[in-house]
Length: 300
Image (cartoon, rainbow, N blue to C red; front, side, top):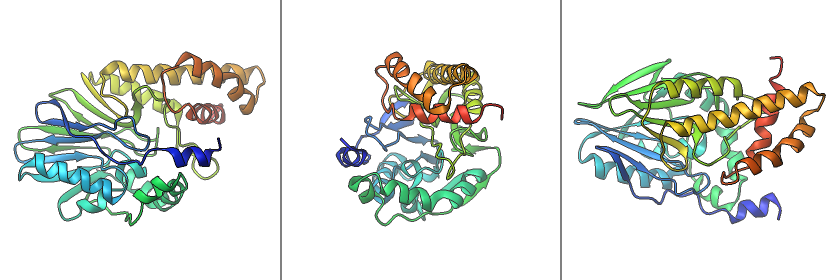
């Protein structure tokens, strides 16, 4: 089966789940392990409610906004996006006028640079994906910050933190320090090979080594509940599992490169081994991208 045929058989990337309360006043709309559907967060304070990610396109944005309005029950809405990729933030347009949109400046710069190109790339993933992108508009945040920002929702503080280039230029995590709840965006997934959007020469804004370091920093926060970009909600062990995989890929890529193998040969050698070592992980197509990213970074 060709990649085009596989894409055509993917389920529609639609947010279909109902909000699940993972802690008092903290909800996740689960992705259901549907490709290109993110976990969406809704965090309630006494005064405001924060939405974390929107899904892809206006239809998903409307679904998320509807759930947010119901749970907020009159609270003022805020929206933040973990990173610029279409399945996470390209439903933001429907929140305009209903919510203040806030995220970091580096994410905005990346949206400006790549948003249109990623829209076209995603449209090529099949008719179901293209349908969700119909009528999509890229909107500006109302508030941008550099490095970090704290949101007071009324009786509940939410920390927005940026660690720099890793999965993207400006991946943002959302941390509830009192409840020890962490939303990672695509810095971590559950039972899924990490998404390495490493597409040279068009997009090389991925740094596997820094990504490993960021995961260690996130572990040091001591989260008790971890909401990944995709996959089931877990705990700090989820971060350790992703970091362990990436450390293994980096080490094996370094070893085989030192033996004189080129990137193609390393992919051919390692991909079957990694598929076997992680048999219950989805999206093995990302293994080769990770290897090439680490290989090209050797000596950098």
